[in-house]
Image (cartoon, rainbow, N blue to C red; front, side, top):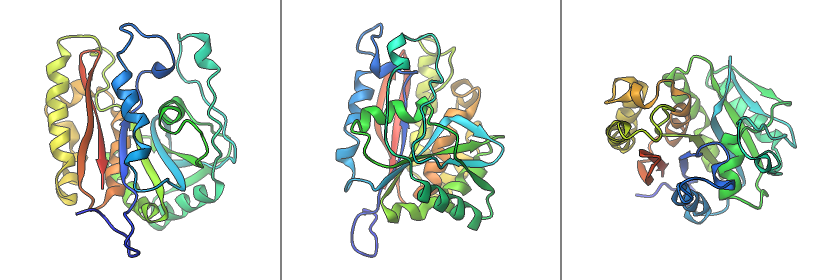
Length: 272
């Protein structure tokens, strides 16, 4: 059954999305249509929501800190943390407003869950935030904050952070984990990794659909999954899923997008 609030309205769902390769949606690529299906999925995300979100919280695989940190500037800059791409991709803009009150609330919720956190008024948004959101919400008119990963990349800690933030769904905050379900740079474009990515994707898809307790346990021990370390030699692009799944609480997860990109399987998941 759909998740509902006490008012009877549908709770805001939670997403784990792929953010592509660098600024891939805003440049020519070879082959030319490699990222078209992923871009179409991202463009369709707003219409899949029960209503427009009041704010968006993104957890990106491109920011790690000693404790959880959240952007608190009213107007964060962009961090062009990719290299070797066309000059035009370093002039991309995403001028959504920040949300300092939401940043404070996020820190308060984490602290209430005995999770250390702090605001960062200087940090900008990395490409794991502004690239997919520029596709999904091109008007850049929804307040936006970014939450870091915590150094050490402990899946249990990131699940716990998600649990602490779950109530934001009741406030119409859209929580988005932004990463890649397969992220081995040696594997992209390598036919030998097609089966590797398919096996890990099948495990991930099955695990996400489990009950909350079983799902959390499976994700906590993700490294024991088939082809796990071949799919994620380092797990920073998978950990945003842990925060998203934690925030989902009892909401069921399902795969809502899947494509073979550069010969590897990449998927997106929705909870609720």
